Each structure stands twice: as structure tokens, then as C-alpha cells.
Image 1 (tube, rainbow, N blue to C red):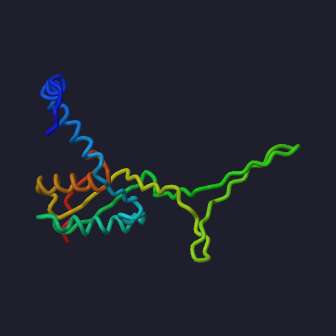
Image 2: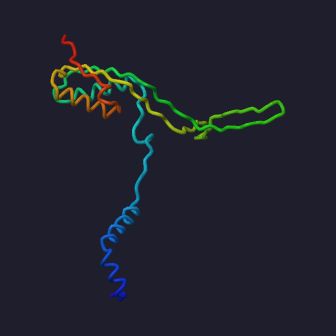
Image 3: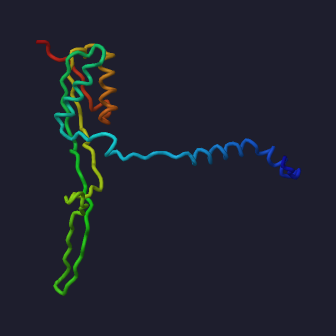
Length: 164
């Protein structure tokens, strides 16, 4: 066993919990993590009607919801921002600026390089369903739509659908 001086033993016994926390922190930092890009994890659905249909199908599976119709409004649609190369040419008459989209060759095809993709931002949602007369159904739909689309509950309206 190691022979430690009394000063070191006293210091270790005094700060044993702080040392234990520090060692746990170092151990956690050494654990590798995988980073996945959002583009490969989930496909981006930018077609508003497709999002509405998918949301309708999902909400219809809720207990007591019944038939559902969804209408969404967009604040801005999805956008793709491409990598660009900028060049400035200075001459006697002034300067010329030009921007060109950067491309990568993949099996002979020039594919533009994507810098980032901005997801659509929703402005509001109106949901009509058969079970909206029940408070728990209205609450569940409001919370679900809020969490899926990033809307506040004040931007979501849930009403009873007209019976045929």
C-alpha cells in the first residue's frame, strides 16, 4: 500500500467528497457521445398539406378524438441556405463582386453544398374534431399540437366538427 505523509492523508480525508465529485466529472467527460446531424435523423416535411394530413392521422388515434380536420398557417416556409464562394475583383472602374454556389462532385454530378436548412415556422393551428366537446380531448390535442409544432397554446384552436 502507498505510504502517504500525514498532511496528504489529512487533506484527502477532509476533501474526499469533493475529490469523488471531481473524479465522477472527469469520468463523465471521457464517455464518448455520438453526434447525429438533424438532416439525417428525421426527414424534413416542408409540404404544408402533407404535415396537415400527417397530423390528422396522428390525432385521430387519440382516445375519444374521432374524425379530425387540421388547418395550419405558416409564418415562413422552410428554406435551404447553400454554401457560396465570394470573389471580389477590383479594377480601375470599380469593383465587381460575384457569388457562386459551392458544389461537390459525387459520381460525376455537381451537387450544391448545403450550409443549413431552416425549418418552417408555424403561425397557428385550427383543429376540428368530433370529441372536442370533452375538455380532456381539447387539452390533449392542444398539448400535442403545441409540442409537435412549437406553437403556444394561445395559437391553437380546437372546436367540434359539424356532424353530417
